[in-house]
Length: 129
Image 1 (cartoon, rainbow, N blue to C red):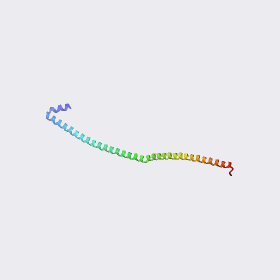
Image 2 (image 1 turned 60 degrees about the vertical axis):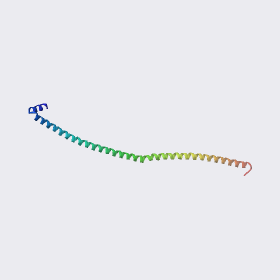
Image 3 (image 1 turned 135 degrees about the vertical axis):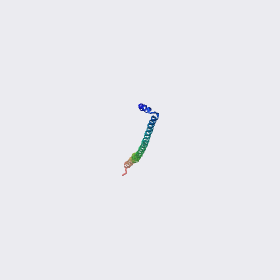
Image 4 (image 1 turned 90 degrees about the vertical axis):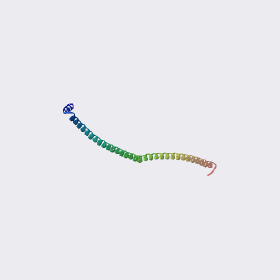
């Protein structure tokens, strides 16, 4: 590069300055082209990014809908099982209460039978028929 500038200076400063101006103009044009390409790439990147974000939001929405369906379909089953468990508990309590009532009825029947038998035996002992 120094050799080129040295040879240009042999012809005078004006030709050297003209060549340097042409090189600077070429560099400016190249920078403008690169800036346009960078702008195009940035625009493409922004579009790609926005598309990716939109697709991610769509997948998120779909997943949220699937989760809502799962909650709708399976949580009532859990509630149903809890209700059945409560129903079973109620049945066991009713069975226990019924058993206690039956035990009380059995006791009363035993007392009645005992009283009846003792009354019959007293009647037989007193000479009744």
